[in-house]
Length: 492
Image (cartoon, rainbow, N blue to C red; front, side, top):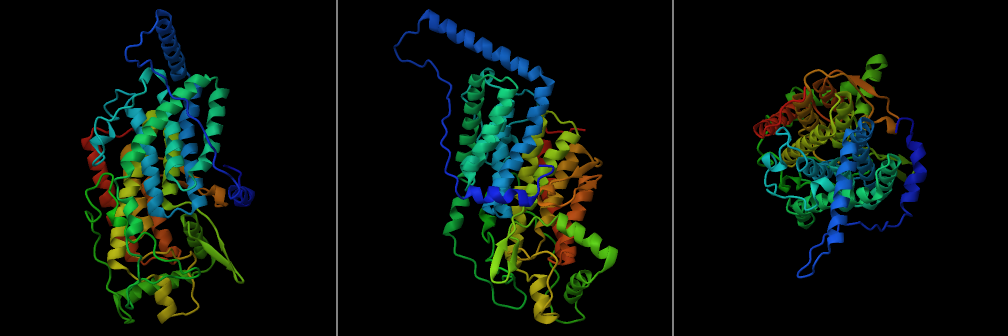
């Protein structure tokens, strides 16, 4: 994705609309399970020989350092492939976090059943309500667990995402990579069968998280009152996921377990604290020269708004971007390579970050729709400057707390626990969207920049940013506490 530009993808976006659903067949591992039928000696010998060949081939692949590197690097590729389908489908940020979490849990289930490392415990040790003693029926020595885990990421996306069928192309590419590395087709099919089995178990469990109940909820109606959120230009999109608080968390106990400090009371009084918060947003937008360039560079880098819309005359044009969660998932894949994580720990890191992000969104969205606070754009247009526009487009949901502040801080807490307080890396997650990479020296440095970007972009007041950090840190610390109790230790 290094040299791709968004304009290069336009033909792809047009082609997607014309694409049909790819039909695929999965080769399932066959078993000689007969009732009363006798198995001949030659058939038993063939079965033993096949098993021996599997074990030798897998043992050889596990020792192949170059191939191991290929598979470890492909984790980031597989997750990014899901991100691009979410971009295509304009998946909202909370929903995106849910998809990432389940996709990684399937892969993690494969890994945990193929390792004796006590630092990689079963997900039931830290994920609430996760089914215990769930095992794959595919024999461990009949497939390469790493290949199966990667297939599971793609398979989960195929089953859960609205346009998941688009991931078939990525799966076909992965199979060609495996064949190029001389992985026998029969072993590839065994890995696919194991990965799909893990996926089906995870997808079945996902159906109990209350997501299916959202569509039956009453549609959100903006509350009447000067202090409350109201849809913002240019598209005036209705509120996104107002009932997300009912979603079952991954690790934390409930959506309101971590309540942020109270927001600054609404006021139109020019001497009030709230008015000062508003004017800070307004004055920052008026900065010029080098200061303005600095602020807008940071705001643009962390925009992560899947709903961005621009207008040309009477025509509205959507500009698709990844979500905040997608950005942090790509950071995770990036730093896993920088830190030299092995395959299993890289899958674990992705899983833990995804779980922290999902829980952070659940907490944040609970607060957003409890407070229903007005956005800076609405307030400034009503009471200060009717023509004012923020640098970033205002997202379609209430203001308090800042979502990027909450989830970035939670993700940074998790990555800091796993990889330490100092790690130099270059974040190129947004390069596909023609946004230059930025270099950071720690995850907390990156999270702090992500949070203040909302002020620079004109879409959040400072207290929503600062208190969002408090909320996100609480969520992140709780997830860390739970995984510590499960035996997961820092990697460095």
